[in-house]
Every structure is written in structure tokens, then in C-alpha cells.
Amino acid sequence: MPNFFLSSAAGDDDSYVRQFFDDLRSRVAAMSADHSAELSFLGTIGSRDAAVPPDMLLRLASCDVFVALTSPRYFRNAACGRQWRIFSDRFRPDGDRSAMLPVAWAVDAATPDFVGTPLTAAQDPPRGLRQLIRLRDLRSTYESFVDELARRIVTVGETAPAPAAEPVGDFSAVPDPFAASSSDPRVHFIVAAAPRQEMDRVRKELVYYGSEARDWAPYLPDTPGSLAGRARQLAADQSLRAEVTALEDVIDHIARARAAHEIVVILCDWWITQLEDYQRLLAEIDRRGLGDTAVLVPASRTDRETMEHLPELRFGLRTTFRQSTRLLQVPLHSDIGTADAFDADLAEVLAEARNRMFRVGGPARSDADEPIVDRPMLHGP
Image (tube, rainbow, N blue to C red; front, top):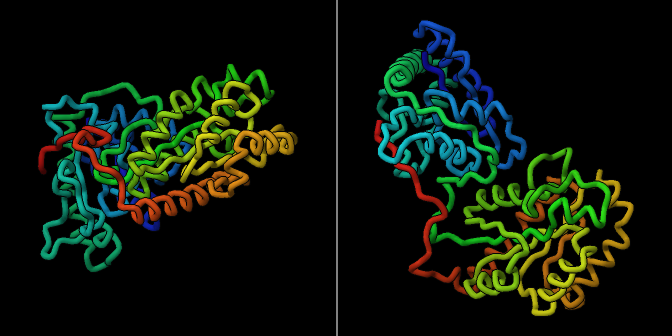
């Protein structure tokens, strides 16, 4: 019998969302012959939540029906977009997607075409579910709407449930279908870090590194998740298309981005300058001129090894970016001791870069410029 996944953006209404979830789950259970409704899952998530519960990924791969509480906040939330994309990918391109049910939490949202028309109570004027659940005189309308939605979940779950799939491995790597369109500015995040097997040559604490440079997670254990994934999510919050790359072909990559008037941000590990090949490459970038490229050099205050070696690491950084630090023209942020501080610094860098870009006429356009993802289609309600 059916169970559902409720997708919602974290915010001030979380307690009401929880109440709605409990009410809906109890209705679905009452209409079902077994206890499968207990497997329903509330997937409320913030846009920059780095740690995604494994059971959330499991439920996204196995729940029968997906219910999305749509609102302006929902469509700005990259994590909600990823939830939508993961569930949508369970269907064939021409498959029946009636198991995806958008429900209007607020009626003032600009809804992407592929989402379809969100469900609302039969009222004139239409009201979002948030109003129905909060206003006492609309209680009967709320109860009727929950009953109707529960019946629809049971019917769809019994006749056209979503096909099961394997859970995704890296939530942050899932494209956000609500993200900015191809006409919006692009930001390139260049991860100046090395894989664990190379960092073993210069430092002892290797927990911050993975098999690839983009796995670098300097704020472990307090803030799980890669720095690149966090940066990508923050860029999505600012309606920027984000591209993450490592240091391979970085000189040409920066040149192409600057020629297109696109934003470039280097996420630099303090320790990378201790590896000779990487140090030479970064020094060559500096010699050619970083221009408007920003450099962020984060490290957790709880990373004792980095804090103990900070004087020599600072010297290595100044030596590597000798020209940039001398000219004082490159935005270089090097005291970023927490994930929150990183968010604040990156938000400032992106805002300044975006303003500067529009002052010079905006991003260069190309007929070959394409959307970052293929948007899925959804049958109407």
C-alpha cells in the first residue's frame, strides 16, 4: 500500500509542515490495508544543508508518491530542486508521472512549467495550504483538502507508483532543475586542493580529503560535505549557474571564463602550496594575472595541524600569489575559520563580482549556451 515523500523547504513554517505531514500520513494509513504509510518521509531541508540523512536518500529512491509543497522559498531552494530531480529521474522520459504531486503551500510562487499546476483547495480566491492550516475559520477546508489529497495518494500509489531506483550517492552533485536558466550568470569554482593520496606527502591529518580534489571538506567534522558542494548550493541561492572544476587545464579555463565575463572563484587549500607541482601552477596563474578572480582560503579552527603550521602556510600562500598580494587588487580571503564564515565571505564575493559584471555589460552570450540540465516534464494534475 502507498507511502509518500513530502518535500518542503526549511523555514519559519516547519511546525505547520510537520503537522500537515502527520495529518496526511494518518489519513493515508487509515485508507490503506497495511502499515506501509508509516514509511512515508518528511524531507524538509535547508538550501545549504551539507549533511543529508541516508534515510532521506533511501526514501527518495523507494517512496511511491512525491508531494512537493511549492512556494517561492521552495523554488529558490537548491536542495528541494535536487529532491525533485532524484524522484523525477525514477521515471522513463515518456512515463506516467502522476506520482509527482505539487501542492501549493503558498499561491504566490512563480511555478516552472514542468512542475505543472500545484493543487489547491476548491476556493475562490485560491489559498495556499499554509493559510488553511493556520487559520481557524478555514479548518474544515483544510480537513477536506487533506482527505482529498490522501485519497489521491492512495489511488496513485496503488495504480501508478513511481518505479523503484537505487539511492543516489552524492546528493550535492545532483543537478537542480529549479536553477537559473542559461541566460543567467555563471560562476566557476576552481578547487585548488589535492586528493588524499597526494596530501599524504605533506600532512598527517587526511580526513579532510577524498579520492578527488573536489571531495575536499575542510570543515569536518562539524560541517560534513565537500566545500565545492556547499559553494554550488550557495551560488544556486543567488541564481547563479555553478561549474566546479579542479586544477587541470586551469589556465585555459580561467582565460575562457574571463573572456566571457564570467565569475571565477578559487577555493584554495592552505596546504596546496606545499606540493611543488601545484604551487608552480598557482604561481603561473598569479604571474599571468588573476584579474577579478577571487581566492578563498578556508580552514577550520578545529583543524589543529593547520593552525599549528599557519605561519609557514601563510608564507607559502604569499610566495605563491606574490603579484596578487603585492598589487592588492585580488579579493583574497584567508581567515575563514567556520562554515558560516565561508558562507558569508562567498556571498560577499559573489555579490561584488555580479555587480561588477553587470557594470561592464553582463555575461557574454553564445548561441551554443545551453541549460545546465535537461528539465523533466510532468503531466498536469
